[in-house]
Length: 518
Image (cartoon, rainbow, N blue to C red; front, side, top):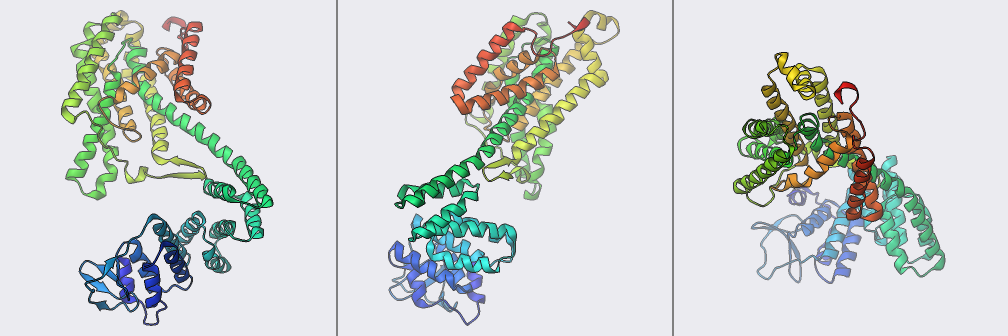
């Protein structure tokens, strides 16, 4: 423990006294918080170590002294010397109020750190837990602070501290200063103060500050909705790209497409489990890179078996294909339940996908969502190149447009069918790999995306990759924008009604086939 080392290494000229240690460890919550705040103002290394020990529940007390205990070893917090723990020593109990005060005290002590990031973190913590007794500490830090970012957060911490002052003039000054803040945390503190404010002038100033903050936060909320819609659109695009090949190009109504997505997600889970079991922890961050080809291969393999075993006998018979693939989807779901259980399994984000990019005070773009957007663009580019620029893509398009002529030209149409269906299934596996990073992985994973995938393909235009892109992004953005006004259920109904009306007016979708392709 760091605090134990500090107790042992601190200099002999300490400021912590027996009375201060007892005051921080015994008594009612209010008196202990006052003792903690007073100790922070002139804290030395032993005071820091004692506060850390209190936060770690490593302090015992008697009527006359406090003791820091780790394992079987007890030490005097004032001198740092090892001592015998008395038999009547009792544990120090910290409630939530005291834990908040201890966290704020630790943050206040971080203001003396040489790292600007730690000082910024400390200033933000003090801003969220304002206490007028810490005002001298904040002002002292402001006088010597040179970093502009840290100074800005310290100014906010000073203003939120003055906001809870007994002086109405200081509260008015604080409310006016906080108008420039664009932080949800500041807005929360202002609302709390507004609920208990008695002075009319201060009330007006707080209401004005809240209105100004709302104006500043509005752009973050709007951009957040757009990003969420774009993220949902990229997920729909990944889920629908495989179907754009199997249904759009080949005309196969594959109701097991969602289960192929599920297989890709479970392949990612198995790859993660293999890395956790057989490789060192340092290699865990690379499991997702390996899981991408594994998920593609697993779903493509199942798709190839499905095509050779069932679907090749049903070309040109859409109703029978629909029924057969629906039955296969039920079989795949039950197989997964038998192998992995009915409960969801956990798939962790690698360290490099954890966290997010803080664009605005109320807008953070999660790294996993950003990675999925980039991944969707990369998969789309790869599919477009494969279908439009390669020999396999030429054969697929040829067989799709005119199977007899392609066969007469020497193309092995049966093999091309298998390759094309396996490709579409493999892309579904890639979608499952991506979905495992943002949601639960369970036997029913694919059921949530099969209907949306068909909507994307039909709305965009059967056989049109560009249409699938426009439809996926359009549905994602429209759904999220409507959710803000009407709720998730009504937004889904509105989107479905729009698609029904659109298909009635334009059955060929956004992009229609032209020329001889039609």
